[in-house]
Amino acid sequence: MELQSDATAPVSGATNLIPLTLAEIKEKLSHLGVMDDDIEYLLSHSQADARAVAEQKDNLLVDMQWNFRSATPPPSTGMESPINWGQQSLLRTKKILGRVAFVINSPKFKHRFNSQLSCLKASTFVGGLNGADVIPNNYRGFKQVVFNALAKSDGHYNLYAYNKISGGNAYGGVGAPNMYFAPNQLDNSPMNQSAPLLLHELTHTFGYQHAGIEAGNFTPSNLPYYVQMITDNGGMNERDFPSLIDLYHHSYEKGYLLPDSDLNIDVFSQYFGNS
Image 1 (cartoon, one colour):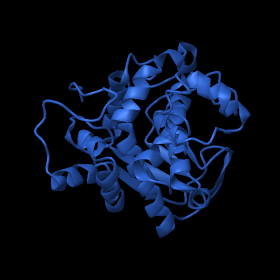
Image 2 (tube, rainbow, N blue to C red; image 1 turned 45 degrees about the vertical axis):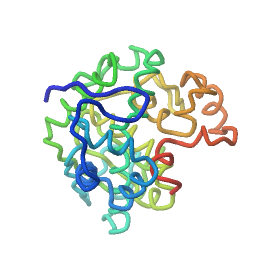
Image 3 (tube, one colour; image 1 turned 30 degrees about the vertical axis):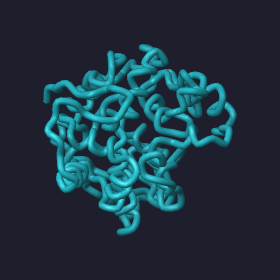
């Protein structure tokens, strides 16, 4: 799929497009997997951005087929005990994925993504697949990598459930449409706290690596940790953290401690409220 031009401005709104009705906006957002209650929240609190996402062309993660699988052998020693998906966990995971799909297409994400590219280091992209072995020139370059990866699977992903995943609540297969989840961990954590890591793991499935990064090092020099930091606490705070490197030194090295400020609320909570 080839990209058409899309807006990357820091402000809300799309240009040169026929305005959609609210009903049409709802339908467009539903194709991203955004749940009905989240759509209503967006229209009540961030209608301009909701409209911008709905009206722009070539959105990522449209009409994804999330196939919830069970009882598969673990792909690594960091995963233990395959389990069946419970209905509550399945719906909760789909809700988070819908939020991820909205955020990755949102004006706020695109602006922060484009403004922080100097943080990325070419050495961390070694081994990337599907064009993910180089630093993208801009958000549209990243978007093309995603489209290339999704085209290989026609948007079909396999989501496997485990009792435990070392180091987090999800794991993405590099360059493959497979993700692995620990539903018990997801069920016991606020959704918006889980979403940045799920986005991180999703970028692995697009082909992105973080070569040479030691375990526990959250530096945004690589694409997976870059998008995670953009969408985590403080990631949108350009006033106090003009660079994501500033945010990394100030908070991530100190255990995610941030000053109490509305500016530090993560972008998922900015769009969907506290949950």
